[in-house]
Amino acid sequence: MFGWFQRLLPRSGDFFTLFERHAATLVGASDALAKLTAGEGERAAHLRTIRDQEHLADEVIRETLHEVRQTFLTPFDRGAITALIGSMDDTIDEMNRSASAIELLEVHEFSPQMKQIGVLVQDATRLIAEAVPLLRDVERNGRRLHGLTAKLVKLEGEVDVLHDTGMKAAFQAQKKQPDPLAFMVSREIYKHLERVADAFEDVANEIDSLVIDHG
Image 1 (cartoon, helix red, strand yellow):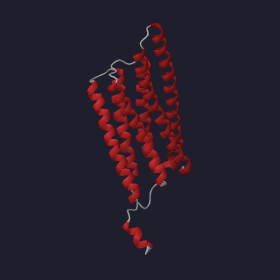
Image 2 (tube, one colour; image 1 turned 120 degrees about the horizontal axis):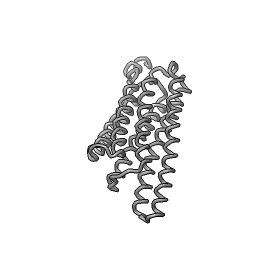
Image 3 (cartoon, helix red, strand yellow; image 1 turned 45 degrees about the horizontal axis):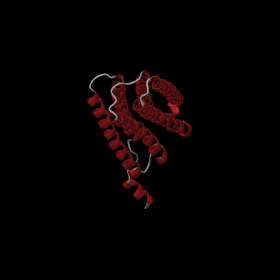
Image 4 (cartoon, rainbow, N blue to C red; image 1 turned 180 degrees about the horizontal axis):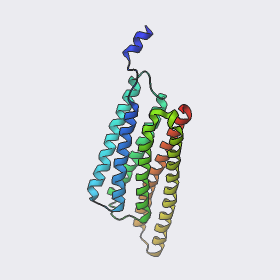
């Protein structure tokens, strides 16, 4: 009876392809965010791209959760699968929140530190896109995965430094020429950009957990 029930359920879902599809949305959104903060290209197009990529990521999340419910045998523990895809989704959600804040607060000029953070976010998404396919064979790729997650954590630390440096510069500018609104806007944008980096560190931690458990 149990064997008959097993045969009714899918043996395995293509979770790796879903991870890779989601990683592609991160890269697309980060490219637009980096261009937005750099002041390159059409602002409205970049904002639209980030929103569109976030919607695509939501579709991947829904597919992943459906697969988790329907699949009898999964490559990793179900909790690990949802934790990883959830942490990846948090990153694009934070990018979308950053873009929404930029649009709402009508920010058109960005500090050097904000521009650098935009580039680091772009770098981080590429590291994730490189790491995710390696999960197809965690045991063989464990060392390389640890190397990539270490780079992700390092990038998050660099963003923290840029956040603090940028906020200090904004405060000093406020002292020289008081503009409380400009300072509050800068603080809000820095807060969102830092949260993007924090989310990347969470992705790194989830990947490391998979390597420890399955490597």
